[in-house]
Amino acid sequence: MMHITHKDFKIPALGYGTWQLREQDCLTGVQKALEIGYRHIDTAQIYENEEFVGDAIRNSGVERKEVFLTTKIWMSNVRDGALQKSLDGSLKKLKTDYVDLLLIHWPVKETPFAEQMEALQEVQKEGQAKLIGVSNFTVAQMTEVVETLGVDLATNQVEYHPFLSQSPVYDYMVDHGMFLTAYSPLARGKINDEKDLLSLAHKYGKTVGQIALRWLVQQEGVAAIPKAASEKHMRENFNIFDFTLDEMDMKIIHGLAREGGRLINPDWAPKWDASKAA
Image: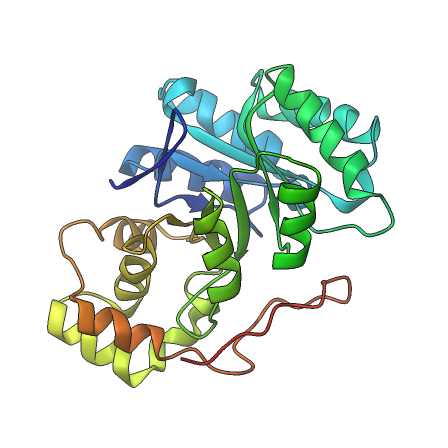
């Protein structure tokens, strides 16, 4: 396993995402992921599966301190008071006293960032969140939080895969000592028919998904959290640490970024930074 070092923390560069995993599927999936060797688990309030993530960790036999656990505050809970109360509920469901990383799931303009961040910093100060961060924030929004408000963010969790350049966001995070967490790193399966990735998969004796995940974690300060419902795919996703992409192949994958490559764009999304095709 590769790790990202952030201050005194070591974050596994590959995590297990639980979006759309419910009840028994979530319980079984997280337990199997931990058995395989994953030590980074990502969930969120809106996923409605925190209880099952908590049960899986408790039942796994893996010590809590060995698991890097992330959850996210939903948009309706970002106000001061509501955030703290909702986190108490999440911790109860997760059956733990703290999460390793707590994120604001989407930027909410109706509540001042100053209010959101004060609440986020409060729960960090109380030890309920070891690290704090955001998700789906633009460069301008990160700038307001980090530079204007002076908040020490660990990460911004954003959609990132070979078809979507995140260079403005990524460059900002690198410059400000943050790491990027990539969700939908396999572009919801759309990478599987890409001829350049198929060629690289043949060259390295790996699957297309393994090539894409290796490309992500091989970048400085990038973690990836693919979801996998089957044990077969969990193991495939985990098996990316026995090879290295050469510099030219990294460039080839960067060159796959395209206009319209973004897949996650709900009505409440911010005005994204321009996705530059390579």
